[in-house]
Image (cartoon, rainbow, N blue to C red):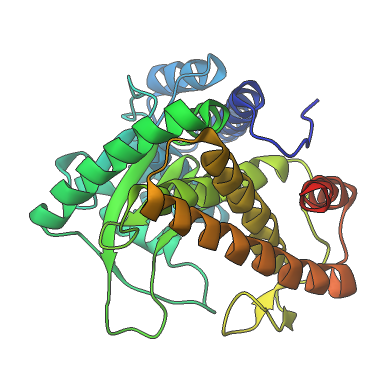
Length: 326
């Protein structure tokens, strides 16, 4: 039983990650049984993949992405596409690190760039383009992220443990600087464990820690919602979002509200650690106040219009209780 307590917990995050991978294994086992004798695939390699997932091996986000495409191909009876995707799927291999930091054009991602972009840009209400960062931008971001992660591990070890358990790849990208909607970062349940960050944004270590808390909280919510959705509201029904310039589905407003509380928590812990210099201290204080304002604005919409499931009620209650305690 997964609890919905508000503070980060590495043990819980590992359990959620394991459950997501076992769920994928169960689905692949079902698919393999149903298509056996009808579509050609390497049964031995598929069995090894399923076994690895059940054992908790940390397969990359591409494994989940290929699975998503496979389900769509099978649903549309596209046998040729399904056959090719099965070949790609059984070639997936687990990672040997907690998480990898890769640019979008890294050789390890060559076969998956198109599907990564397509699955990240799946929201018709917030379209955007992402590109590979320049080598210089990627190098600077890598150094900045490494410093940020060291600070996170020292100052907020429980958040670092949760991050390590939920994230398998950090993909460095850049957005279109002339576009109306700027991409700063994102994740998708169809790319479980994948975290996309704009390497041109997040100018200092505190900003990066805030975005790490932000995006890992989104992944956590995907995990919380694996058995039951967070809201019953229809995705086609939009509400004025106090956190965005555009109207959003309730699920999006719910996510943004909870995540704002998590960012506030992270900034408060960072401030309490006593390790920040004066400028970083001021940045964290300002960010914390902004996060509090954003939470209250989002919560008012969720409270008024949200049709929350039992899971959604429990998760948001924990965030509300934290914000009431400050």
